[in-house]
Image 1 (cartoon, rainbow, N blue to C red):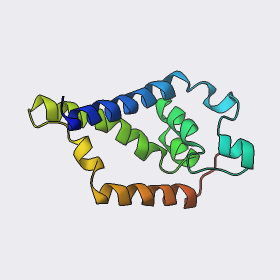
Image 2: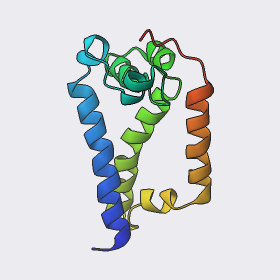
Image 3: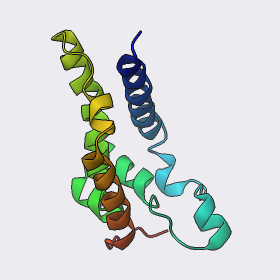
Length: 128
């Protein structure tokens, strides 16, 4: 098994596991205990605060609420859905997985840094 295929299995598996976990735990996203260690220990929001509630809102079909919980939640959700689909199509066409090649680019790394900055800077109305 080549390195790109191994990377694709790990990345796509993690994406699918995240989607499944967010679907299974969507009911407790609003009423459950505070799980963010940064917020529990330091009483400040981290860059990911509100993502779980954003994903829960998407599963419930409320996109406007999802954006208000975390501005990048719907974007990340779409990326988690797209990654395994894109890889599966590319593998079926005999071209090999695409996601590992994207992950290795400097453009992708710059987008991740900008995404983290945007997640911290963009306003959201997460009530917690």
